[in-house]
Length: 141
Image: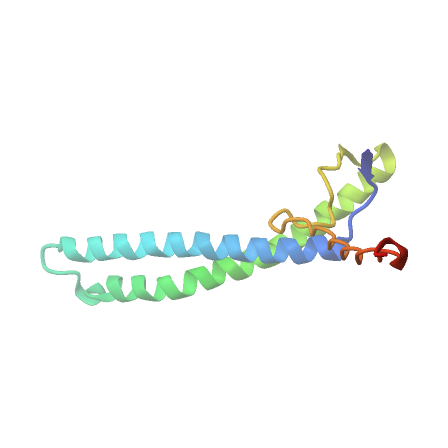
């Protein structure tokens, strides 16, 4: 069986792009913030002749604040950017699918879709045994 995707729902693409962009942005922000905190602590430990003056101890405090602030900022901008790019991408897909056709894929049935593979199929109950036939009384005589 061949199928063709004629169009996508723009709002559904926006929802998925928003969630994925926010999660990806949060993870990227967390990684960047942890690297910044690490390098800020290394720089503060290096020491300079005469000290760092007014910046003394600020690098480690700034690193701690960045671990909280950066993932939230990256997550927010990733979610908003993902939603915008999702809307643009969904619209472009619908336009191009209308002009040249949508994505095609082929599907093949893989067994009975009504039964879950983890549950064995139910066997029909056995029929009750037939009652014994009566012997006519003439045989006893």
